[in-house]
Amino acid sequence: MELKPIAHIETDFPTKFGVPRQSGLVKGLKGRIVFEPEYRDPEALRGLEGFSHIWLLWDFSEARREGTKWQPTVRPPRLGGNRRMGVFATRSPFRPNNIGLSSVRILGIELHTSEGPVIEVEGADLMDGTPIFDIKPYLAFTDSHPEATGGFTEQTHGSEHSTDSKRFIFNSKLMSAFDAEHLEALKEILLSDPRPHYHDDAERVYAFEFAGNEVKFLIKPNQIEAWIE
Image 1 (cartoon, one colour):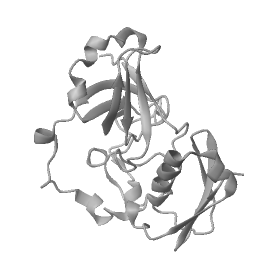
Image 2 (image 1 turned 90 degrees about the horizontal axis):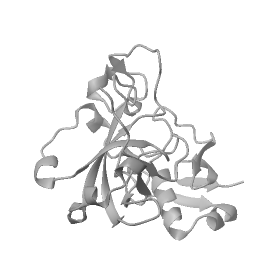
Image 3 (image 1 turned 90 degrees about the vertical axis):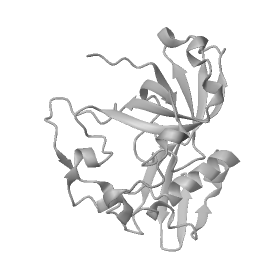
Image 4 (image 1 turned 135 degrees about the horizontal axis):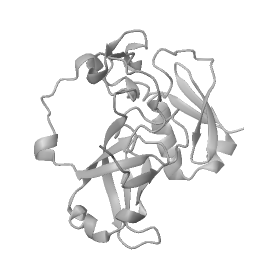
């Protein structure tokens, strides 16, 4: 059985750290889906303009552990990284098959560009260059289940934005490095607290690559400090 990437996505994250833990968590993040040459036929997107959201099936390309036996349990970050759950009860990237699933919103579709058809989306949780295996329309009448339960994730559900009351302190270099749209997205990323759930050191400096810059940050009880050196 062979899976061939049909496209890749362009985002502002060249590395894993800082990427939102779930799709839609940071709605301000934009991405471009660019098709591989073999699949650059505008006819393949006919009718897609009528949908607001799509599912992306993609490759956890940076989570591959070649030659390593698969593990039936993993340590979800939501549980502090010290409790094990079955791999099929989690969205861990370390799986028998490295397949990811994300729901994103369509912002626009350009059928005729120098790169072929391009889909602009928002809310993606993918690294720059991530291979995409398939694209399917999101259907609210079958894909949305308001009555669904969230298992162990309900213990920490909502914690991503529990820092809404915090104030931001950005240095001038950071402020001048990003436009208003990227600054707003950066705030959402920091509010979601990209640190591992089991790290809560208010004096530890973290850093991640975002939109061509290394952003360093501190998350304190009442404020978030971020800067570019």
